[in-house]
Image 1 (spheres, one colour):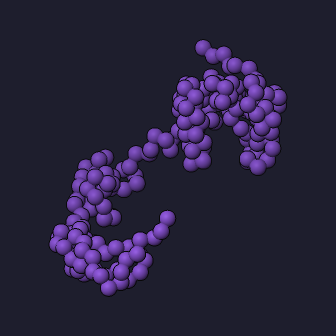
Image 2 (cartoon, rainbow, N blue to C red):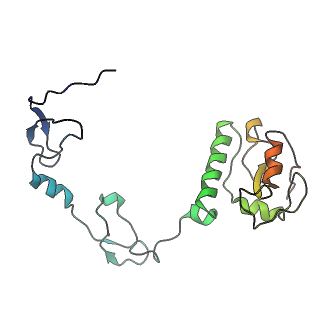
Image 3 (spheres, helix red, strand yellow):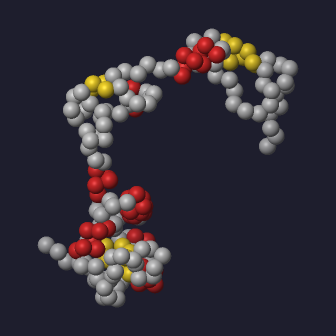
Length: 191
């Protein structure tokens, strides 16, 4: 694909995003096109009006600390007033949250059931015992270790199993890795 050639001597016409006045410019190489007709318009754009708003928790009026659109301004005056995010309460780390999202997404693509749960709930339910080999799983070991904890889907997502607590079990990482996409372990029966 050939690059478009812009003549350095030919002026082009644009419209200012602040005052909507037409202005001309000369393109002198690569880079972003100008968006303002003058330095005055550029300064006006950078000084947006900050609107004080009441805190959603305590009702005290406050000025947001950053310049943003009115809909994006924070609704809480401080971190103590801001309630914790529901996702942050559910998952221990950002990595666990991302991993759970990927599992739910894969289950939806396979048209299987999916639900939100913290893998730690499954590990506690299984009393930190591997559902594949039956051995004890050490809580202190982290992922690169082959005996670290892993969430195993009894009926794999690739074979139509859902990302549900009923279809999940605690396992060693190495046991889960060796199992690959085979059906292993036993379905949990709870009332």
